[in-house]
Image (cartoon, rainbow, N blue to C red; front, side, top):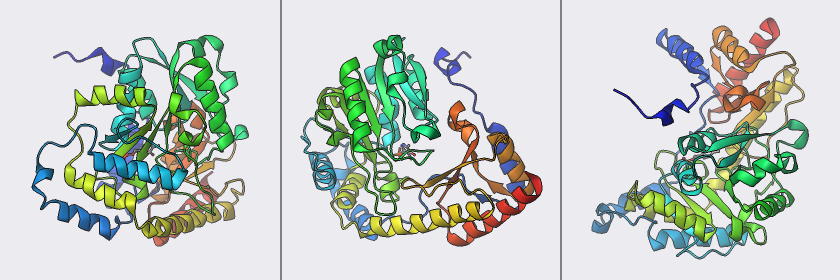
Length: 390
Ligand SMILES: *Cc1c(COP(=O)(O)O)cnc(C)c1O
């Protein structure tokens, strides 16, 4: 049997060997502590799970859902944007329901790019931006995110001939994996860049509500004129611990929303209506759950960073957002090697930064989605291994 050439464009999975080693340790009965998992371990709010159960009694939810999401859902998204960001959206044309934001992110390249077009993809980054571009037959151009620049892309450094061919620019702040945040100023620059080069700027705002120390993350759509050139992806996965439910949304430029919707109507059939109703309950609030989750994640993040600093890695910063700590390794250590040896010596899993792109080399990502005891024990084991091995 022969398969699509499209699949040949997808690079081999870098950490297959690490995964195999983890499997082996688990099979041997080892007590493996994983800082690799990126999804919330706190259960979703009770009023939301109750709304889901109640919705099952409504006969209409068992029929095919609306492709774009029900108007009620899109109106709840518009209310959220208005309340949270002061952004006014037309729920009829500027909002689209997604079966989790990953689905929309991945389909965007198919809606925007023709073969040979360029997609500007940050490096390191959530892998879907690059993979969806390759699947669409477009050409990714990696923009390095450097520590010296606060892990923001230097848009002026993109060569003119690349900018000319680019159709899409990806941004993601608060950022996975670097945990960096972006200011309104930077978003203004990005919108200006998109206008100048006639491209769509897509912002993945999955972590807008997972922030610490009083920091509030902006929306790209807050920038004047953003609705002319921008689309933003949002998700209930991280905010409300609903990763398994598969519900998210896109908001922004109506032509981009329409184009994405056109791809989707030919591939999927919308979100389950009962999940949509529960998502409305989540977005409309109360939001005390989100506040409590921020406190929990913030405390765990402090445990991790304090622990790393105490073992001598005093350069590691306290992130202001996301579920991750992005820790630079001491000079000379390679991230894949470090992760391999840490697993061997300490039964602890961290994600090698190089897995998110070549510029992620020299860093590892630790997630805050495990409880305080496991974090403390994990950090203790890391410190022991680092002191004796590295
Ligand atoms: C978790 C994550 C998502 C995907 O969220 P879903 O809505 O569950 O598909 C998108 N972008 C980034 C950067 C993420 O880390």
